[in-house]
Length: 127
Length: 310
Image (cartoon, rainbow over all chains, first blue to last red; front, side):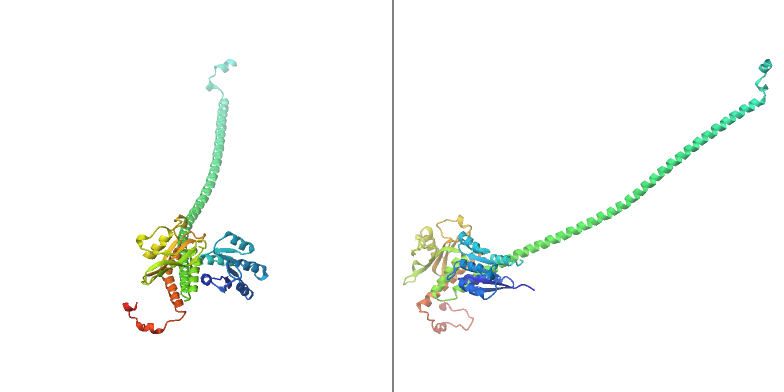
């Protein structure tokens, strides 16, 4: 019996979110939940169990860095892998996110195979 | 008496001595004969013993040789077996290499297909969002997102042509821009191809007038700094209505890839249609036109439209 995984995508751009959802649909047995921003993300995290989180950094209301901090302070999701998606690829943002507890980062523009590979790597799904 | 003895011939001597002498000689001969016989017998026995030994040794050697022969056969059999196994190993390795090559080709094809699917998805998402609304601000927002998020443009501007009463473009007006706060793009006067200048402005004007896009091929680091990374004409049918200019891209992007070129092609046609549609919708205050426009042509047959309907 194959393992089922669930993923939370937190991204304010509908276009980017749709592209991420499409990319993740290529991963077998992965259920994807979408959130518009950090607050929406936290709400959805509270209502379900997630195996991995993908989040943008620049978002209104609550940005990705705050979200990472909040997620890591929650014992339920202390060890949930987090991938951050950055636009500028700035080292500062990346380092900050990694220090806060993110596991990996992907820079925009995203390539679906790259997203798939990173998610599989963190979920330890054989390729 | 002595004289008598002297005067006697040998044959005259008494036969006892002769017999004794003969006996002595005979004994001596017999003794010598037997002694020689004994010696010869001893020699024969010795020779016999030596031959026995030699025979024993030969038998031993023979046994060793027999064993060796048997062992040689076993070795030959083993060598044949090794040869057979080596052949099998070569066959298996050859099959394995073939399987590996097939697998590599398959993995390569799979990666290519995944990339193609990913590119198609990007095109689908971009097109879907461009045409998902008739509200001008949303169309512009989607266009900005598309350029920033999907293409990876860092600074860009969208110019639309400002037409005069005769339908000729007088200027290219920047209606949206990103990453150019310090150098907000200015209006560009549209002249003729003969009067087109150099630099970025000249290139934008030329792309608008010719309808031929400009896209930097290869690494951006090798490209001319003053020239935009991409300059794309926007056309509705055969009519140019504006230009999208990508001045710079995100630092992590070193060149345009296949999907970018496909997005540029899509943008050339779809962005123009989306913008014009949204402009018309905005100009009509969001009112949808009546259905009477459909009466001007027959939409119930698959016949090609008449030229006057186009």
